[in-house]
Image 1 (cartoon, rainbow, N blue to C red):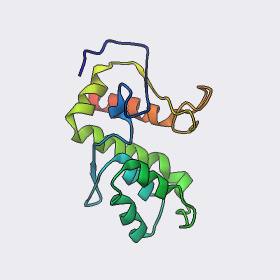
Image 2: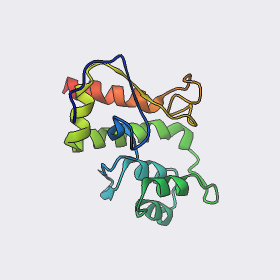
Image 3: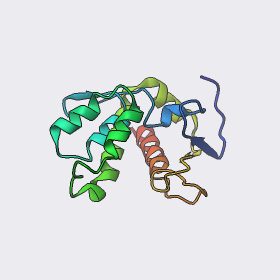
Length: 152
């Protein structure tokens, strides 16, 4: 890990980019609900569904990309409250990740008060979207978790 200064904005997205540890695809698993999930992405995608067999199928995917693909299906009904609970589910999983793993934890703290933006060109909800005007919900969650860790 290199020494990080205090740039005003940190962008992350692909696994080959700097700060890829912030991505939900990063290989930092989370223990939630008596199960080990290989990544935040695995957990998040599985929570879209009430079907436990389908959740387990997602959990067992070898790659986060495959977990996301299964989570994008609409052949299995989404839980009816998904839009109401998805932000909290993401926040909970990100908290566990950054409390569990030293490398992303320390990296998050090393960037001080820099803004964090998921540079996701196709996602204007969790990321900044194609033109940078997206809601950046994941970046906001990361900044919140950073503040919580500092306050502890």
